[in-house]
Length: 373
Image (cartoon, rainbow, N blue to C red):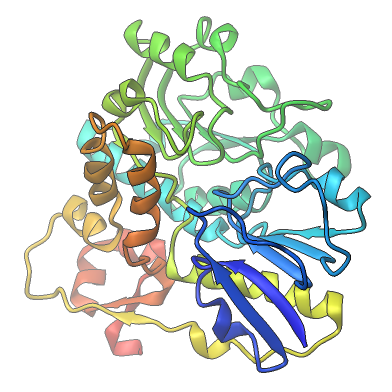
């Protein structure tokens, strides 16, 4: 029987497997258990895997996976050189992150009384997530440019905006992996050299901490060359810069990609790749993708309040700010990511038809009518 050792927080993983696979889980806050006898190891971004903490790889271990879109927490080349295949869940949370971005943009525009159609959004990174963000922004007819030179090199059908054009945008939103080396490094991509000669109304980072130089960002805010920031990822994560959090319009604990559907997608992608690798069959998982009906018609909401009712951005924001003075804020940061129930993505939410008629923004976000379910 094949054996998997997995982070206990990989969502509903057991429900994607059948009796031909033995699943053992571990608490990521504890030391990693021994890997002997296991065929596969599944982790999340909170677990760093490299040649230093796993010096000896047992012969049984053939597959290593992360239930996250990014995999910079894994020393991939090391494991591959030892004959261990490395897989990830890239793209699993693309829709969830795009909803975080468009929701935060809408909240920001309402609060700041800014017309988004008069702004230009620069999307840094045009992979699965950046493309999903572009789709969301298009629905709201917000002008945007996409910047992704590496994709332009490998995809003849994609044309990247120039660096000069992207830096002239009013708003920047980041959707790139964290790369410290190579021909297109992203570490501190937005640094003092760019921030000192450009100004922005809003900067959003929901990709990886370290893509933005946080000290340079604070300096730009103090000089009023950056008006607002929305930050979900942090350079020293799980620790976070309290000054950046205090300066942010929205500050959240790396939850942009957290939704019921994104978490299901991640588990599904891991299991499907596991299935292909070991040539085993796994159960149909479509029954796990449920919709949620919410009755709100009797309440008098503004658009701002309604968005926050459907997306808990401000709840996470308040929880994070409450940690600013806590000496154990790194530990509590992780708890914020695991203790709250996952939200449902907009297309999986059904509301009363009267609300959809009153707030066209809900239709654009993909919310369904209760009468059609």
